[in-house]
Image (cartoon, rainbow, N blue to C red; front, side, top):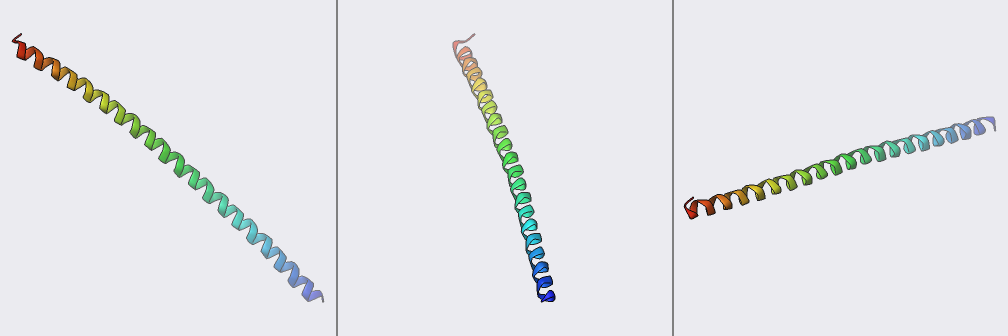
Length: 76
């Protein structure tokens, strides 16, 4: 009977340890996923901001070129 109780206690302890390990692994995975998601979001925001700046620069250049063409066409 003592051997049975000892085996049962060892099994219970092993089960609890495995649950804790699984919980910690899930927490690590969630943390890593959050880090990656945050990094991806930041990268996307930076790319969007850069694209907007590029678009504005192209628009300014295009406007300047149009003004230059008008001046050249008018003979000034």
